[in-house]
Image (cartoon, rainbow, N blue to C red; front, side, top):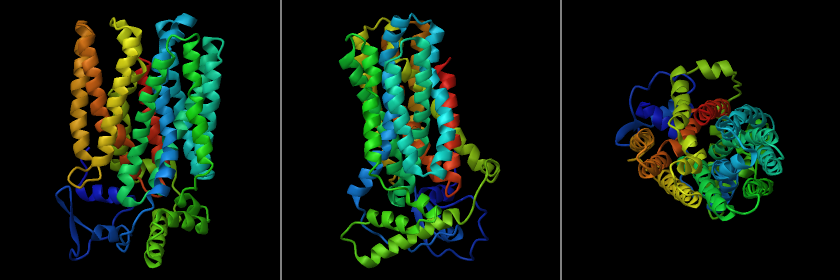
Length: 455
């Protein structure tokens, strides 16, 4: 997964690397360092980027309100991961489910989210990112109510698949919207916020499970609680601006200009504001510049970059994170842990995942840290955690090794593959490639998750 540093810098700046670069200039005129390695700013000029973007103060209240609202779509995925973990045991008992049926129930949402991922790319390109978020919220809201009111396992399974469509749409559109709205210098932190919100949803759901466990029809209350964040996402999204890039692409330049202007602090000078807006829109035009790509172009224009990006999507799930989260309570009880203690352990697991994700989101934009170092360190921690879980399962030496391994793995995942997968994809693919790449990457991600959770 090692990329050349110049290509890494191009991704961090959001510049396009989809076209072959022109011949290099005769001399280097501006050299800076990234992660301790020299980087030639003339690469930006070669890629069509202007180097005239001034330093400007960002309107953080506006940016955070937009990103926070969009990231609620990611919270829905985390919430479902946590809720089903606590609900699966009482559901199994009420409907007398077999082991295969338990696997079908937990994994069906990931399979359905693949369809949602395909739909997301179409909806986001044709109708806009905002309407895509509204659609995802409405589907998740209806699905939560449908699952909670299901009279049988088959009906519950159908509604869970329906909910998966909304999850898949949110998984694609949320990072897409955040990447297109945020200034370049904050894009790493902002895009990583989607994973952070997934990890807010997980402990939140675990806490709800702990509060509702033992009540009559507790699993129904757990599932219907998912309609609350979905309703919150739908309501707040109504007040969001549309992505400026989509507006510009849809020949609505005046509206795109207004949105970009809102990103600049109100006390910034008019000349700087005008220059920032002009340069931002020019960079967006350079990204798509009238290009329309097909799926075959996505696969073939830069095969190495496509392979690297999709490999990240694959490895984020093949290492087993959804399997641990989905079956945490179920597995702990199989190892003799009481129901309430299992819920408490999963809550601790969710808090660890949230804290390590926040740490990763903060440090990845520091030049001496970057993207590779957290991936390498966190990946090794995941290996140690999985090894501990495997030893505990094979030798049946009690729940201690299992708990230690699961907590270690979750901490490593939150530091590395969790937040960085979608950030890397959003940065690698620019312009007309981004929506299709994120959509296809999500399909691979969800398909791999299905394979893990169904096995």
